[in-house]
Amino acid sequence: MEVKAPAAACNPFAPPAIHSPDLTAVGSRSLAWFSAAAVVTWIACGLWPVASMLTGRLSGVPAAVCAAGLLVYGGALIAILRLPRREASRSAAILLATVESLMAITVTVTTAWYLGGTGVGIGLLAVVAAQLPYFFKSPQIWTWVTVQTVAMMWLVDRADNATLVETFVFTLVAIGFQVFAAASSILTISEGRARSNLARANAELTATRELLAENSRSAERLRISRDLHDTLGHHLTALSLQLDVASRLSEGKPAEHVQQAHAITKLLLSDVREVVSSLRESGKLNLSEAIRALAIQPIDAQVHLDIPDMLIVEDAACAEALLRAVQEVLTNTSRHAHARNLWIRLAAARHAVVLESRDDGRGADVVTLGNGLTGMRERFESQGGRVDIRSSESSGFEVHAYLPLAASA
Image (cartoon, rainbow, N blue to C red; front, side, top):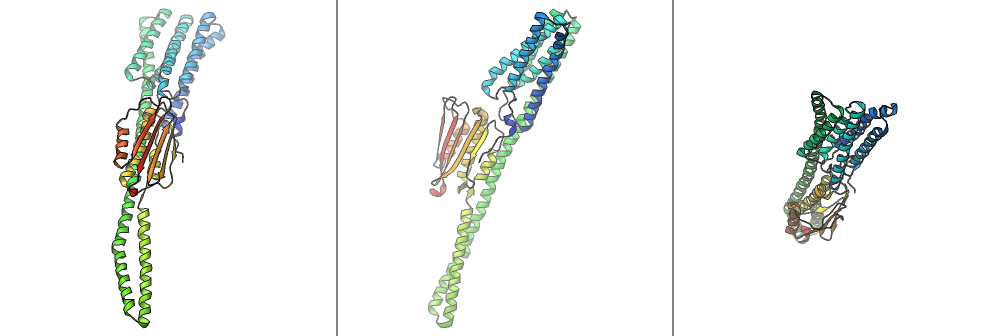
């Protein structure tokens, strides 16, 4: 069975710092609109300078500089939107954002110097400001916005010789647009994180509910089977013994009826034993549904789940250990692996359950066990099992766990 992450997680235009659990279906749609709006803004800001070039108002070296600035800005914009959502892409994103800021200032100064002033730079810098929250924290965002605005206004003022009031108003407008754009992205990211955390919590609660419900049903079946065995079974056994004695003491026609009653009693006792055995077998925990419910949660990887339709576990502690192990694997992949794929396999071996997981993430040369992995290992060892963890740089993260079933003890 293969469990896929939400389709939104495959959006190739998501900014690079967006990784699970930040990206949800709603968040992906917002990012698609963000990408489209950014490209349209770049094109719109370039229309007036390009029109000036075509009409001859802007020509020669200034036209070449302006055109190059717009093209390089557009290239950096498209590149930053197409960066994979990986932590390693952060440096590239910062470099591309720097190029965008420099090109926006270059285009603004060129048009101000040779075309008598233009607000092209405000739109271009607003797009940069909208990208910053995806790879910067708040203090760095506002510092970046301030620096690029001051640099632009200082150069424009020297080129355009604007009055102090005009410069002040233009600066306020520039900062206002950028703050609005950055704040909108911050709200989008916060909303995505909230939805993703809620989806994860819901998946964990659903899995726990499935496990509790299955445990409750199993306990009830076991209680019924014990009651049948201890009451009806014992009484039928006593009746069978009495009828056996009666058949030996009676003769003639009554003996035949006693023997028939004895045979019926034996048949009924056999049926009761079959029902008791069936109830005991169905009273074992089927962990498959709980694990499937847990695996459907938003992580920035496609989950490949290989699990039998019936994964029978008799002991509730063993079942919980397996469920929490799968939960820890999903959480670690979401937070640390930066993987595209996660493979999880559970199989019933001889009197045991084997859990194997691996991802294609960045891995690590030195594996440091946090509280989650330590807790997983402790749970398995307390049940007589073991957990082996392997990883290396750029080769992903692997977990191999073995848990003997209580029935085999």
